[in-house]
Length: 156
Image (cartoon, rainbow, N blue to C red; front, top):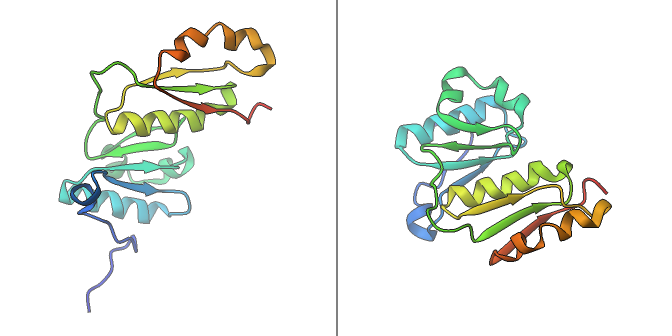
């Protein structure tokens, strides 16, 4: 009988070949031991992954060796294991817009995910409805994008 790794996770090493997307690891609810084991497995197989919902407290509990293997952004709660984010040379096709600064964590998660996959992103923050002039002042900039993702609701 084969022993399961300490993470209890079954990774999907063929995902990129099968569907064109790397593995995404949802860290909320996982223990530091589980996350460390997943990262070690990814590093050992030279696979890449996007880690999401990795809060700062959980990141701080990870062993230093694990922390060094990932590029972590505490605001978005995202981390990249295996390589730096791909930079897109193309003009930003997607605008990620926040109504208020309270919406920044989820907006940054969306932007980090897009950048991970090489999609150019413009981040436009704090254009909320409390001061409609803040939105109208940025409309031309927003309209230059093919896709707009809006994170709104935490302020209101």
